Image (cartoon, rainbow, N blue to C red; front, side, top):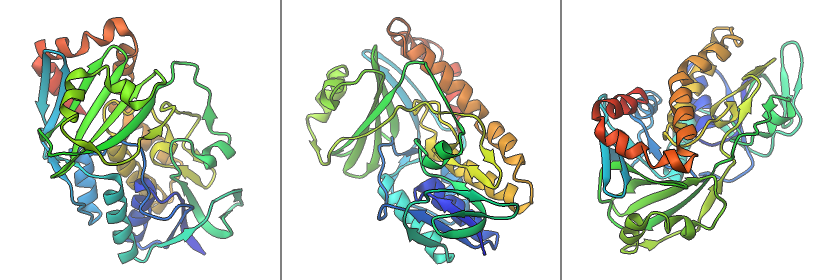
Length: 338
């Protein structure tokens, strides 16, 4: 019998399988798409996430990140990371590095979809496989989470993300967050000649129309060339009733999501993968709910506060001027997310 069946072959799922393999558990990943799997994400990994990758034996190629800079017209606020550096890395590069490490440890990746999940007293069956446990790491709109009835409605304003890459040399080793009254644009250097630009907003409009709200950034990007199609994701906020349902645990975006505003998606996915496997290895799956809440608490509180302020046009334009006037407060917020 398989020890751990993982639904989803993105970073969260592969990290879960690697953690399990390092503890001597047999792990199998079920993923319908051929790897490496791409996704519309900001592609910045915070220092904590870089340390988590190193602990797994994974060191993907990318660009070192020294901190975060907020930009709104003439206003600037920046803070460097205190405990190490972050990493700007293409999603496909990160997924490929995790897949190589998983293969080295004997993790099998099976093409297919999980489909129906059936649970017994000691086993869970899905995708034609039987295992002791199932971890659902199948993304923002997790089919497993939905099938288990773990989703909750959310009537608050919805936000969406769009991302595209530009062939040009990065002009900074900071993640730049450009603010406007209708959303944010995130610039992440991911290679010596490539930057990723992700736009987050509650407004539904084409990518280039979003860039019109960031004239300084749009002018700079005009010197480069768009190298791929726009990818989208959303709605971003996902409320979840719980992260444990019998012999099934939710990890990564499937476990619930506030917003991409603070750029901690990958780091939280890696942390939740480790917490889930630790709880299973110790025979205490129910402890995962509390562990997840603890490891994500600062992120959820800070992100929720920023989204509430940023979603209102009259207060969004106050964020960067306030951060510029209070550098210690901004630095403390950045370091709280490391």
